[in-house]
Length: 207
Image (cartoon, rainbow, N blue to C red):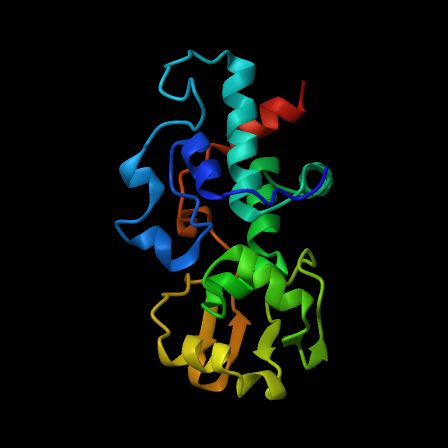
């Protein structure tokens, strides 16, 4: 399945809540959820009751789109989470949060996850001093992320650092003036910006 390239505000409207896919716009009055909080399309305002399967599917789709993960990638992540010790749902969210592109966004080095993914692919960052350009790679506690020296002088990163307002979650430590971030603990569900019922996703994949 190819990555969705249409209007991302339609995704938020379909899920009925902000998924923070357009960066700063999501925090303004221009956000579509505030103006048209119903699903897109001709029948978007019809209240259709979902089956149990439909509820589980919508929860999976919400999380998948929130992190910008393809269907196959999400299914593989679930398999990995299921083999880890502990609760599968908690493990799955932890894997999503530790994705390289998500960490870049959470550190405030990008205004949205799609932008973070693009910046990673273009090779603007290092992890533990080594070039890293794979958005889906899973980072670990202790990893140090830094904007490459030649990228630090770009107007893009200068503006991000000068206007750095994003508060990093407790499991991350960020030094915007040094273009550096560090993972200091495992991510917690409480730090995720949207409500997630991960048990519904586990139930869906357990069928």
